[in-house]
Image: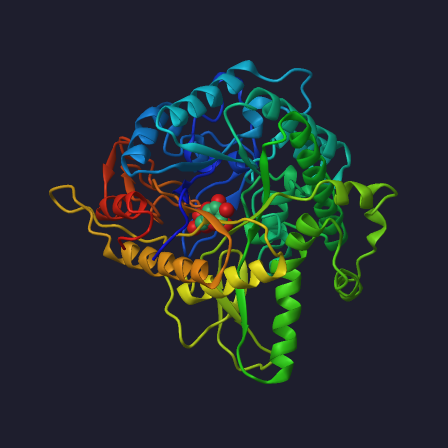
Length: 489
Ligand code: BGP
């Protein structure tokens, strides 16, 4: 494999899934702080923090807040030159609309970025990774309100100004398209848009995430407001530092027609446009694509949320790079007898040629090569980065403390090979950050047991564990990959 010189190799985490310290140094509550744990069979539930005996995994997570120096040293040992992390909005503006930012929160990320720089690791910062301050949900219903656009832009201006010499790469919203995925409904509306109805906000008993109510018109309205917020942020960022590279972030679940029935082909095209393409088209081209109107018509949506002036804002705030997460693919069919499968907030049809993880996510490295080519053709010359890819699995710790995760190595080997082939195909791929390089809390299930890391963390779903870190076999393997620029797989 020959990856371009200077290719970015590293890993990705989100603040709410690793930091813990959920109320420390002035941080306010954010959406994930309201979520209890679940597992592959039992869905996560939502309960506004009222129950002192309940276990909220994000409250302590893996305590990155107090272990970041040790963790970044381990990342450096693997030979990384990039680390994707998110800033937890609630550390900077605890209530979202505070008059002044929280200095302790700003100082924390100063230290994290300084630590990265010490090892020549470039931080890649997600500005909002499912971390909308809870007060913005209760007071403004998240991005349903246009006031939240201003709150977001002020938050961006604050961090862009503060870190303008420490951070070059930024992503506005993590997986902005998940509210358009079929399984997500209320769950990703809440996660992604901060959108909840009062009845759910005031729940006294745990609610299954899949039961959180969602309204289609509200969803599209809030999503439009995120597009506007993202475009304004890009514009503001470039005013503060013209060298900033600011990207979007799409959850790309590659979709194939199950059969060569033309009706399946058409259905797959519709689903692909809705779920994978629409958000990227708005971010990259600065306008809604032609097919958006047909989707809104089909879903009974009135696009009157597009106000005069919005179209200009979208045009002026197009992104500098396209980034996406890639874990799996799904099939689409119009035939009734197909076997369905769920994974990564999406419901799909099983692909008879693919195996799946213990959580049902279908493993498809060739799909990554296909997807990279598709994106490169759709948005010519735009730099592309794969900013999440990984394998959630149960790990077994041997008596001597070693962890032989060859299944994880083989998942990564095949996906990195596919990226190398895509580079040879001509795709302008500039970097790769694996998901959860250190074990952390799963977003969909809230588990610790669904482990992604090269680094094991002693922390478990019953709340036990001493947070100690240790290297899995995959740690040594990925170190070799990073140090050889992808040549040694
Ligand atoms: C993506 C999210 C991440 C992450 C990952 C793995 O959708 O951006 O936050 O968690 O998926 O998913 P899970 O944690 O549910 O296994």
